[in-house]
Image (cartoon, rainbow, N blue to C red; front, side, top):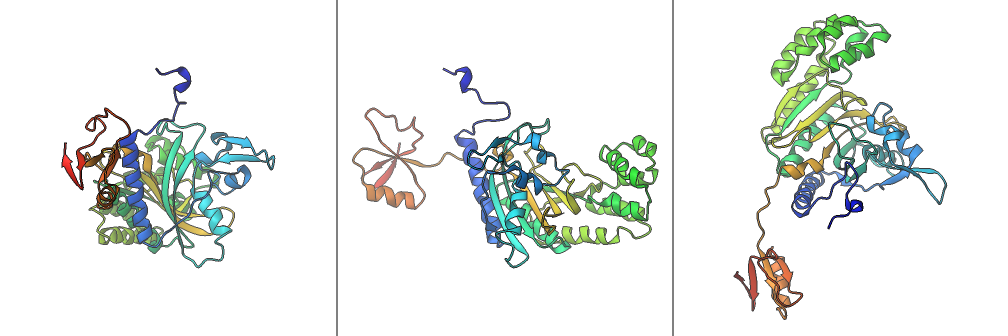
Length: 376
């Protein structure tokens, strides 16, 4: 019988065996891909001093606000601690301290739980499993190309299909406002806001009429880049366009399961702290984004980096299709050597504990008879 105290708080949930198994398989497959490309895994703690954790988060990052973080007083130091809401800043701290003398570029990967005090409507979960990779010391086209291709490969290994990548240019307005499409400093944030909301009328009202063509430079990459070239008559975006083409070429060469590539150059939701390049990952059968990444600067050390994070929890609804495993029932007095041999070649075993057990009801498909399995 369920009691009121047995209910979980809003935004938290149990992952039962099938969902937990899918998440675990996806996590292992993705981490294996990252490891095979030379990314070393680190495991920062769940809890840090609040001042250090928030200080290395981007000041515009939504989850970085202290009021969204679980905080409490450390009885040892009497300082305020916080549960991490994002692992990326912790990787920056590690790179800037313990691994400050390591050769660059530094390749690190991670996987762990994060928590936020208040979720949002788009993602109501308050506990999230975050997996990702960071390339510390490089934010070039080559670095971005490696990270996009790696993220797509990791998702494919996790069993996802129909993967697509949406590129964006977070500093686009800054680049154009400096010369090609001049804006007064006080206009820049207004123009960004109206581009974010795709509001043509609002864009005109804040003096950003010249930026209207950007609203239509979206869609499949080749088509969107043609629109972007037409806007960029003065050549202000030539290097950005060339960079996007090079990244797309690398993704195609990497054999990334035919990933579709699109462009939305003015998208800034989730890219408030990225520099010149950002990308969002989607896949068939998964609602919303499955990952996000881009180039950025580590706060505190000001070192450049490129990275991505995958939202592993959402993979519970897609990816691996779990077949009923062959499970071997081991009756009392079974041959332990035979059971060990069978486990070594992939069998799953369940040993008898008491009298009257129903092997089939326990999920077993076979019974150990002597040294060999026999189907129930």
